[in-house]
Every structure is written in C-alpha cells, then in structure tokens.
Amino acid sequence: MIISFHYNIGNQGIFHNSIMFVKKALFAVPNSKSLPIGLVARFSSATGDIGVTVNDKTGVATVKLQRAPVNSLNTGFLKNIESTLDSLEKEKARGLILTSGLPKIFTAGLDILELYNCTTESLTTFWTQLQSTWLKLHATSFPSVALINGHAPGAGCQLAMSCEYRIMLGPKYTIGLNETKMGIIAPFWFVDTMIDTLGPRQAELALTSGKLFTSSEALKVGLIDEEVGSEEEGVAKAEAFLSQYATIPGTARKLTKLMIREKTISNLVKNKDKDLKNVIDLITSAQVQKGLGLYLQSLKKK
Ligand SMILES: CCCCC/C=C\C/C=C\C/C=C/C(=O)SCCNC(=O)CCNC(=O)[C@H](O)C(C)(C)COP(=O)(O)OP(=O)(O)OC[C@H]1O[C@@H](n2cnc3c(N)ncnc32)[C@H](O)[C@@H]1OP(=O)(O)O
Image (cartoon, rainbow, N blue to C red; front, side, top):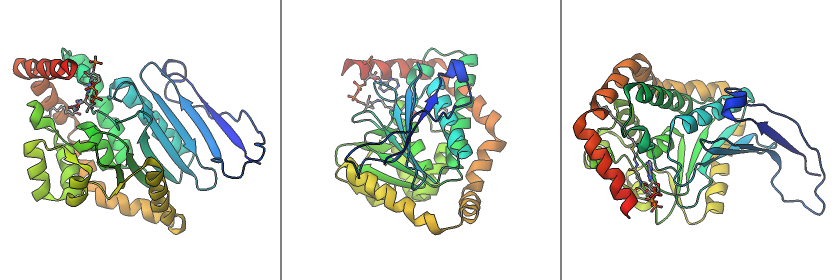
C-alpha cells in the first residue's frame, strides 16, 4: 500500500508565508511496488510553481522550480522558494534535491525585468528578498543537492553553488556567473560563494571573464561534483549522496556546515545595507540601464 499525502499549499496572497500541510488522501495503489512513496505538493502562484515531493522513507524533499519560460527569479518566485525552504525546515526534511521542472533550464538567474526600468523602491524589495532567500538556502540545516538539469547562468549558478553538492546533466548546458559579460558586476557574496567553491584562482578567471562553463568544463574546475547523462541517473546520484547522512547525527552535520560557511554568511548579514546601496547605485545608472535594455533585446531577437 502506498500512502500519499497532498500538501495543500496556498497562493502567496492567501496563505502568505505559511505553507499549509494538509493530509488529504490515503489510498491504495494496486499492483504497484515501485511507485514513488511520499508526500506530494504543488505550490501554485502567479509568480511561479514549486513542486515538492517528499520521500517518506528517507525524508528527502525534491523541489522542482517551475516558472515558465526560463525560471527567472523575480521577487514573488524568490519569496515562494524561501517559504518552501521554511516549510522543509519546519517539517524536518532530511535532505533537499533542488532541480527544475522546466526542460533545458535550471534557472536563467535573476529576472532581468526586475533590474531594467526599476525604481529604487522596487529594486530594494527585490534585492532584499534575494538576500533573504539566498541566506536561507545557503544555511539549510538539511543537506542539499542541486540537480542542474539545464542552463544555470548568473543567480542560477549562485543557487546551485549554495547547495552542498552539484550534479549536472551533460553535455549541452552551461553554468557560471556571467555578470561581467552583461557589463555588470557580481555582488560580493556571489564572489565569496564562487571563491568558496572554486578557490580564488579559478574564481578570478571565471568571474573576470563571465565564463559560462559546459558541464565537462565545470567538472574539471570543481564547479560541479558529477556530470550525468540522464535525469534518472542524476536523481539516483543525488539520493546516494544524501543517503550517506542518514547515519550522521544531524546537529553535528549542521554545525560543521555552518562553521565552514560562517564567513561568507556573516559577510552578507553584516553588510546587507551596503550591498543594497551598491546594487542601487550600479543598476539604476543610465549606462547600466542602457546595457540591460540592449541585453534584453538581444535575448528577444534570438
Ligand atoms: C560594485 C558593486 C557591485 C554590486 C553588484 C551590482 C549588481 C549586481 C546585479 C545583478 C547580478 C545579476 C545576476 C543575474 O542572474 S543576471 C541574469 C543572468 N542570466 C542570463 O544572462 C541568462 C539570459 N538568458 C539566456 O541566456 C537564455 O535565455 C537561456 C537561459 C540560455 C535560455 O535560452 P532559450 O533559447 O531556451 O530561451 P530564450 O533565450 O528564447 O528565452 C525565452 C524568454 O525568456 C526571456 N529571458 C531569458 N532569460 C531571462 C532573464 N534572466 N530574465 C528575464 N527574461 C529572460 C527571453 O527574453 C525570452 O523572452 P521572450 O519574451 O522573447 O519569450
């Protein structure tokens, strides 16, 4: 017998920060021994869907990002991601597999429409949400894997680097912090995260050139941990990685992770306002606005 629960997760506007977990159905699935067991959830809102499936044997949650066409991160979507992480913390998830529900794209990074023609006020709301969502992901108490099943430029790479392990579907997709290519600068906490991941030498080379790595290049420099040929293989590898923690006491694991990440986390926590000011000064400048406009046009022309 398969037991299935459905999380009934409301729209942002209705339930706001709280995700409601409602036991809705208990049913038998005939002739089935191998169907995924667990909790199934779907988060729907105008600003993106987040599908959550929790394996009730292992406690591992698979979170699928779905905001067509390219999972770009706007304020509402970031807020939904943060709420989902809050719920997983509350429900004591034992692990996270962060992936995309869209074909070809993990996430296209920040929604450039949040940066282009923005006001100081709208940019402040957006950036503050980005900082908050990232801090939550970077410091989860449970182990995390990014299953990068599509392109991951800019903040897409940043989300992936904040997971503890990265598995990427090869060979077609690319990943990297491409800000300099767009004529902007990666914020210091993106830079810190890349240095933590690649070391200063490779991070400098990658950041100054805005390099987007293919999966095999990413594997070589250590931007990803494994390259796989199919999503199924990726899921199996992610589950295998997470399963090693089943026998490691959770508090020891979490404190060790936080000790290692503390410098990067506290650098942002202490300098949130300075970071925001840097972003406002840079992004609202006429030159950067012009560049962003041209970049958007070039994306649309393809
Ligand atoms: C000194 C102190 C400094 C302080 C720091 C200051 C500022 C820092 C600020 C920001 C940091 C920025 C981080 C980022 O993440 S910026 C975004 C980086 N991402 C990208 O550059 C990706 C751009 N997109 C692509 O390369 C491609 O779209 C793709 C992801 C490879 C997918 O290609 P595909 O061919 O499948 O799709 P399309 O290109 O046709 O795109 C479909 C559709 O989506 C629109 N779109 C794509 N990406 C974005 C995006 N990031 N935001 C918004 N919209 C996007 C695209 O325009 C198409 O739209 P259409 O209307 O034509 O359907």
